[in-house]
Picture 1 (cartoon, rainbow, N blue to C red):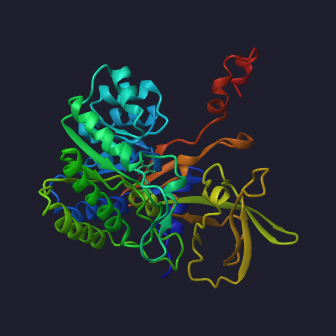
Picture 2: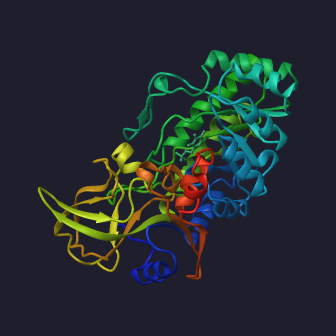
Picture 3: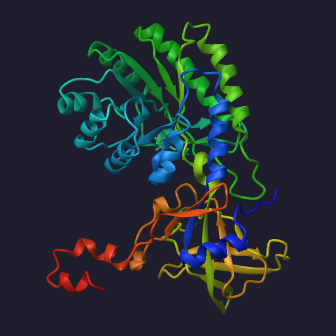
Length: 424
Ligand SMILES: *Cc1c(COP(=O)(O)O)cnc(C)c1O
């Protein structure tokens, strides 16, 4: 399949006239259509809730859009909890799936009425010590260990992952939490990332549903919700097959009817915590080609760098690139597309077949809506870009300004020449 940018050259040029490149742009129409599709896919479950994983795209304008679909937020840090609060999320609209959690984050989550998802059995004592009591609703995170394998080569190594509790710890935890007076308990697991198969959620659901049945019979606790967490992937490469959320929802429904309903657990609410699938494809990084260089290889230098999108440098991740206005030109040039960092991994593409690129061309780097801006940093003193929301009617708004040097220097207010530094 070919990948098409949701932004035309004309629209990118129009945005650039008021918001200089580089910037991330998000497609509101795409975000909304996908959110609706997720809701439809799980409408068979009356308690269904998607908790958008804030870390994928922590922009409050985006977080507020999701509240219109009845979604909650999955938070894992103080900043994410505070953003959730300001965006109007509270109570069971907040899932707090953190690990290695500082005490004060348990307190703030509890003040908001959010659901604490315990990563470890020792967190039971932490919660009691910090809160002095237990919330009515809590969740536990499971780690089955070993290798978790689904069809189509989908697998990961929970045995190496720092998250969650063993089966034995989980059973003990539910008994203790019940005895402490917790009324509604849930089960959570995140076992494989970025899966491109419609089978992952159903396989995970089967694992967790069977576990819920065992918990009922062995501990005597009837769980109220099961959280399938994240891991539903997106097609980064043109040849990848996209997941179909309607099929995924149907497959989970089938397993639900096979396992939970006969066990008397048919009231179970199904939760998801998708991040990448909710925003990934609906974001792009727009950057201008500012240099070309011909040495042992052909390089195109752009005005964005790994500070704006770290995935290629960090994981060697593939991000498709469209040269706007040259969508139909032959891809008869081989380029490395680079940023300016003094790090040779600052390359958005290596040996990529692209049309001939001229200085001034606008490049659209695809699929930056999740873990794009969010992963940014400030190496080399490079500043983070603006973010733009493209509305369904073609109008647009800046939803975060680009950083300024004064932002970068702001934490040097302990420096003797601070007055000079803050004026630059
Ligand atoms: C990152 C994360 C998610 C979202 O994962 P995606 O693969 O982006 O869907 C959900 N839950 C937890 C606890 C996470 O850490």
